[in-house]
Every structure is written in C-alpha cells, then in structure tokens.
Image 1: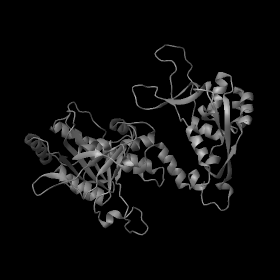
Image 2: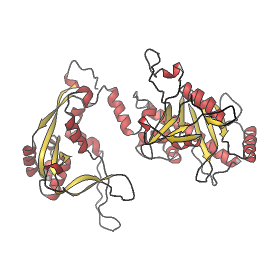
Image 3: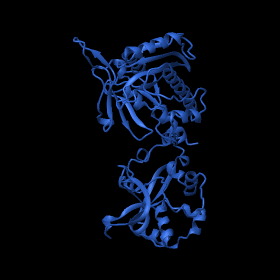
Length: 461
C-alpha cells in the first residue's frame, strides 16, 4: 500500500506545498519520501533538498535514502504505475482533501458520481511546452456522502490497456469491454467510523487504536521548514500505523467484504449477512409486492435524538437503555424475517389493529407475547397525534431532520394519510390517550425459514 499526506498554504485556495509518502509491502515500509508542488520558491525547494540530504527514512527496510520527487513524478511512478496499473492500496486520512491537493484541475462529475466532482491528476507537456490534461489516463471522481464518508473511484479512460479491462477476481482472467477499475482508495477516516460508529480526527483515531507514534501538533502551518517537514513525516507515520491497526481490527470480523467498500457499521453488518448467504428480500422472493416495500420504507424514520426543552434549567430523571436495538429485535423476533425464505403480507387488518390499540396498556408492553404482535404497518390520518415526521427544523441547514411532534394532516381526506410502523403508533396511543385515525393496515409474517428447509442454499449458523 501507499500511504500519503499533503501540506498546503493557509490561504483560501490551500495550494499544495509538499507531501510525504510511505510504501508498504508485506507490513514493512520499503520506501519513504517527500514530493513537492510546482508553486514553491527556490528557497523552499532548497530547504526540502537539504532536509532529505541530512535525514534518513524512519523504519525503512530496503532504502537508506529519504527521496524527494516533483509532484508529476510521484503521480506517474506511484499513483499511476503502482496504484492504478498494479492495483495496490492507496491510503490517506480524509482522501477527498489530499486527492484534491495533488489534482491539476477539476470539473463536475457525472453518472454514478453525479453531484460530486471529478479530478484530473495526470498531465503531459505538448510540443509547445504547455501542460495539458492527459487524455489517456483516468480521472478520479469524488462524491461526498457526509462529513465522514465519500464515494471515490476512477472513471473510464480512453483506449484502456487490455489488463485494465480484467475485473478483479475474474474466474477467466479475460478482459470485459465495459469494465472500469475503480481503484482501492482506503480512507482511514471512513474505516475508523465504520469500526467505532464515531467520527474521528487523525489524532483521536490514533489515540483510540493506540498507535505507537501518534500525531503531534505544530504551531505554524503553511510554510516549508525543517519543523514542518518533521510534522508531515510524523503524520504519514501515524497514518501508516493507524492503517495497520484498523486493518487488523477489520480482519477480526473475517468477512469477505472488501475493506475499501466499507462505509459504515451497517456495511459490516451487511457483510455478515452476505457471507451467511442471507439475500435481500427481492432476491429470495422476486414476486414480493413492491408497493408494500414502499409503504414500509416511507414508515422508516431510524434513530433520533431530540430536545423538547432547550436552554431552560429543569429537574430531570436520567434514563438509559442497555443494548436497545438487539433487545427490541429479540423481543419482536425480527431475526425470523431475516432468515425467512418468504414473507407474507396480510392485508386489511385495520379493524384488528384498532381493537388491539384500544385495549393496549403500558403494562402489556412488559409481556413478551405483546411484542410478537407488533409486525405491522399502519396508515394514519394524523390529527394531533404524537408521531415521527421529517422536516427542515434547522432553517440554517439544507438537510431534513426527524423529530417526534404533534402531527396533523392538512385535511381529513384519505389522500393525506401517512404510513407508520405499529410501534410508532403505539407510542402516540399511549402518550396521547387516543387511538389515531387508521384507514389501512397490513401485517407481515415470515414463512419457511432457511433453517426449516433441507434444500437450503444458505448456511445460517
């Protein structure tokens, strides 16, 4: 793998000054070096040259010299030949930033990366000595998911070589005309989030995973000095050691999902399900009615945290739930749906659910059997009911948030009815003391678990 980190000016464009890299083979560093951008002064380049002449690489097993390369050579020799052509792993902490610093130009991305941006890394000099974008090398497209994750990959290139068209893991080793190698971009910020379910800086991730040489602070940024070069090299070393720790931790999961395709804790969970042979609903049951999937999807609001009273001192009672998600899953018996070969939709049970809600009390929820009755979705015309909803509660943000509020429809017409899960409707029923106006409902029931069939093609432990 190649691990790299960049340093920039502190002016708004944040143009590249220099960067550091380490090449790792079989868990050993075989080369360490620096590369520099084209906008440095002769004095700054002299500082870099004096530095590499005086100092040795850190923990390198093959080379005794610390290398200094112009950016173009670093891109050609390492990011093109090793990373793209030889398909090694490229590691950074916050890839979008570092990749954008070594790019020559950018434009808006298209197709699967639409809404993101596309970077041109490689250039050539034409016969007039002008630097131009290389038309026969791929671009790198980046589309942010959120502050911790981004989709990153190579785009197609003109006249790709035959070996570039061979898919990874191909059983035949033959090229495929439409194949595009997307690259192995490993962003440690994303992987640390996936393994801990918390956002991390390089400093906090090094502390969390106890790397030997953690990140060290520096007082002044944006200049090329001996102290700042030390700072960059320490960052690259810390990133390398963090990569080793994170890859070791990920390896403990022993799942086949490629580490560069892990974006969250859910990715790891899906990896377990995939390796257990558990397929998505429409793969195991292609004729499942899709409109009911839509109803269920519209009723999904996910986890949320909200404050109903802000900036006012009030007496409180501290309440906590230990392992709430697995507890609720166990009580409701949801694993039966995960391992079911078929899921049956029972329609038109709105009258049954209204009766169930009218008789339900808080005490009933302390009975295990009650939870097995909650596998239903309910269509409600809200009328001052306490239900989850999405809206732009923060007017300064363009994002939609989820909150539990008193909700009312614009009219009493059926067209204004919304789908909710039965547990959400139960909350409203218990807290408001009234049964919401239900106009439709359906239950789901698992049929024929993989465990129940001797013809199973799924080895569920």
